Structures are given as structure tokens and as C-alpha cells.
Image (tube, rainbow, N blue to C red; front, top):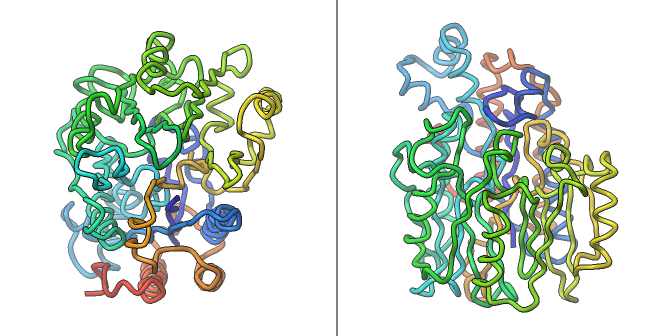
Length: 434
């Protein structure tokens, strides 16, 4: 199943994400939080209507006034925002970022059938490569503990926030298996081995963090492997691995330039998986040049298996703009279990560099584990209607970058979050509620 991040009411284009081409390209353009949230909810409904359990993560508290206070700003809420607007627009923009919407970066998940202690493990990401995202870790940990009961899930604290322990969560994590509920091979993709300063590029996932997460999740060495993302892919805009590779069950799709020493590493992966029916689909530069793959976000899609065994690929509508991608998709329908192609309009997220895979946190659970998940966070028809009404009634249709200094936006955002805690029955979980 998947948990998607509900897009918050302060969704804006501040261009905070270095290395993210779309984020920088659309910096300072007006955003539409109402449309963004409805688009995100519509994507959730596609999975829900297909019969898949679908969960929701609540937006984080924004503006994050505690973050601004930690930077020395004092006074009441309005004074703090006003002072930050005058003295540091960057800090103000970071405090208003709605980036928690991209739930793939929330954490890394390992299912119980892979772990030695037979627990499902969750490690929230520290996201230290980007200041505006690093402030998410504390609330992510808190929310995970509300949703996932300790009887079946172990939610770990974020790993040591040293520079060489940068962790970006499931956006750099893959799993292949014969079926979801059988033991699988977990693949941790990293960019740097020691220090992010070894390159002029911003390399977000460290090998040290990947190794530590695997250890925390009690995975056998035969149960996981490390792959190094290619610097070519990173330099061209694949700031996370989920832009250049994709996997679910026995299907693994990757671009020929996704990994360093790709040919040799994929041979090891095939051998280590032990799967005789593994579909290894390499996209060559002749089929889809790396630049076009990254621009299209073809592999930043959701691949899910229906009850009849056929797979559905849920892609951003932008994929249709590239004939190389549509030609490739036509071919794989005849050669793989991927038979159903769906397109979703999430343009508001895409303008900030987040496709369907960015918006979701995928988990694999057995029936007992599923039954222990907090049901208030699972999508149903009533919840869909409540969220649609709240978004339509309370979200702005436009936010310009200068609107972040509007004192009314503080109260508007907090009122939405307060109503969400009532809908999800969480009690007072945000700092402004205490």
C-alpha cells in the first residue's frame, strides 16, 4: 500500500532545492495550493478506486515558527514572519516550505519478512542536504509513531546527522521479490561514499546512511545490496534515484546510465535476487536519452500489481510529451506484466520536481500488520469528501512568493491544520495547538 503526503496550504515555488531542475526553473512563479492539493488527492483516488489500500500523511506545521525562533527571531507570530521577511527571505521561504508533500523522502521502510526480528522497520530520513527539508524529521518521527503501532512496527529515530550520513529515505531505496509477501532483496542506492564535499555536485544519499539503515532494519547481508548512483545521472538532474530506476516485485526498470559500473552491478543484482522470473528492463540511450528520461519523469511513477497479476504504471501526464517514452511504453506492454498505463495530472507538484513516486511512501504489510495501522489515516469515501471540502473551502488559489510575508497566511494555514487534526482524530499534535 501507499501513504501519500497531503499537500499543505503553503505550497509555493521558492526554488529551494539545489540540483532539482524543475524547482529552480519555476522559482518565484505563482503556485496554486488548492489545485495542488486536489491533484494530489486525485492521484490517491486512482489507487483507491483500483482497490489498493491508500493512506494519508498530514502536512507539517508551516510556517515553522520554531525554526525561525531557532535562528534568533523573537516576538509574536506576525512579528517573527515580518522580521524574517526583512532580514532573510531565504529563512522565511524555508520556514514556509510545503516539501513534506513528497512522502518518498519521509523514511525508509523494510517489511517484516525481510528483517531478522520479524518486525517491519521504519527509519525517518534526516534530509540534511537541504535545510528546508531537514526540519521535517522531528514531525515525521512523531507522525509515524501515531500511524504505525509498536506491536508490529519499529519506528527508529533519524540516524546521526553528520555530513557524511545524509539520508533521503525511500527515494533511494528499492525492493524486488517474487511476490510482495515473500522475502525480497532490498537495494540501497547512494551517491557519495565519504563526504558531500568530494564533488561539485550536491549528492544527497550517503553510503554510510544506507548501511546504517540496513543495519537498523536487521537485514542479512544476503538480503540487501548497495548500488552507487552514477554522477552522470546526478549531474543531469536525477537528484534522487527514483527518477532513473523503478522496481516492484519481480520487475526492475533502470536507465543504462543510472548506476556506476551498471553492467557488472546488475549482473550481481540478478544473481543475488535468486529470481528466475526477474524482468530486468534496461532503458538504453538509443531508446530514451538520459536527458529526456529525467525531464519526462517516466520512471518517477508508481508501479502496482493488481489482483489478476497484471501491473499498472501510474505516470505524470508530461510523459506524453516525449515520443521516445510513449514508444518505449508501447513496447513493454507486449513484453512484461505491465499492461495498464495510467496518466495523472499533478502539474503543481511536477513544477517543483515531484512526480507520482515522490508523492508516495510505499510499504508492504501482511494482514495482521495492516490491521494494526491507525485507521484514521486510511482513505475512504467519507475521508475523500471531507478533504475535498476542506481544500476547496480553505486553500488559496494563488500564492506569490511575496505572499509568504502576509500575516493572514499564518492563521489560514494553522486553521487548516487544526481542522485536519479533528478529521484525523489526532488530538493536538502541532505546536500552535499547545
